[in-house]
Image 1 (cartoon, rainbow over the protein chains, first blue to last red):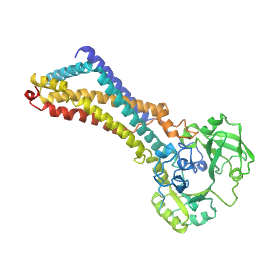
Image 2 (cartoon, rainbow over the protein chains, first blue to last red):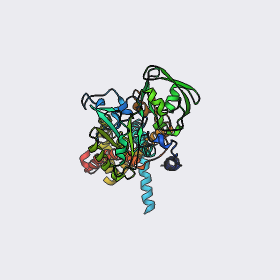
Image 3 (cartoon, rainbow over the protein chains, first blue to last red):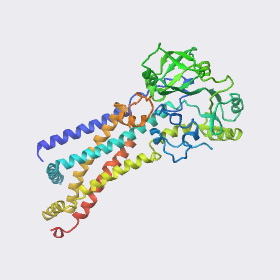
Image 4 (cartoon, chains in turn yellow, orange):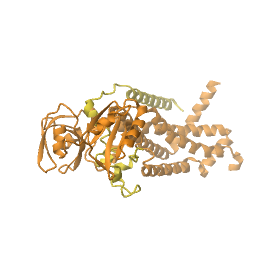
Length: 92
Length: 376
C-alpha cells in the first residue's frame, strides 16, 4: 500500500461520509409545508390521487367493495396499481 | 503494539488491492449488481416512507368516520336527515354531508374526482388539481365545458388551481359548488353521497362505528385509521406477486454470489493453502476476505441508497411512478419532499451487506480452518 492508495481511500471515505451526512441533514431538517387546503376541502381528502384509473384504486376504502373483485377474490385484475394496494376489508 | 497492528492491517489492505486488480471485472460486476438491488429496494422503501409521511400530513384532516349506505352491495346516495340520529350518538361531535363523485371525460380519456364542499366559490366556477390543469393545459381564468346528466354542456371558469404542494392528494380533483354538483350529476336535493362524522376521541371511534352499524345494518362505516392503514400497507406483504418476482431475483443474485465468492474453486483453495503455508492464521485469511467483501458490499449499499434517495426525492420517482401509474392519465408530479427514514436505510443494509458478507465468509471460514497439508 503506497501513499497514492491512502490518498484515494481517504478521499473516497470523506466523500461518502459527507454525502451521508448531507442526506441526513437535508432529509431530516427543513420546514414541513403547512396544509394549503381549506378545512371544508380537507374533509374530502381521504386518499392519494396516485391511482386515478378506477374508483376502487382512487378511493380503496370508499368505493364499492364488491365490484372490484366480484369475479372472485383471486381474479386477476386489469389494473396494475391494484397490485400495490391492500385488500379492502370491510369494517365489522 | 498499535503500530504493529496498523502495519499488518496496512499490508492486508495492500494484498486486497492486488486481489481487486487481478479481477477488476468480477468486482465491478458485483458492485453493479448489488448497487442495482439496493437501488431497486431502496426506491420502493423510500417511496413507501414518503407516502406514509404524506399520509400523516394530508389525511390528518380527513373525516374521523365516513358513513355510506349500500343496497345490493352497491353504494347508494343517502338522506342527510340521518345525520340527526348520528349526532346523538355519544362521542360524535359533529357531522357533515358530503357530495362527491367521478366524472369521466371522454375527450382526455381520464376521470376526475368531483367534490362539492361549502366554499366561497361562485356558481359556474371551479378549482382544479394540477393534473387536470396540465391535461388541458389551462390556468386560472380559462373555461372548461363538462357534460351534465342530460347531455347538455356546463361551462366552468377555472377560479384557481390547487397548490403544488398538495399535488399528491389533489391532482385529479375538480371542486365546484354543491348546486353545480347537483346539476352536473342530476342529483335530487334530498340526497347526498355520504356523511362525514367528527369523533375527536380516537378510542371512541370503534364504538361509534359499531353503534352506527347496529342502528343502520345497510350502512358501511369507514374509520379514519383504516384510511391511513391503506397507505401504510402499500408495498406491504399484500403485493405478493411483485415481491415473489423480486425475491426470486434476489435469490438468483445470492446464488451467483455464493458461486463466485465462496472460494471453493481450486484456484481460490490453492491461494488459501499458500497463505496458510506462509504462516497466515485462519483468522488472518478470514479478515482479509472480510475487508475485501465488506468494502464491495458497503460501497454498493452506499451508492445504491444514495441513487435511490436521489431518484425518489430529487427526480420525483420516475421509475416507480411509471409502474404505479398503470392506466391512469393523471398522476401527481410534485409533492415529493425530501426526508430520510433511517429504518429503511437499515433494512437496505440487511438486504445487501449482511447476506453478501455471510455468503462470502462462511465457506472461507470452513476452508481456512482445514490443515494446509490437506489442500495440496
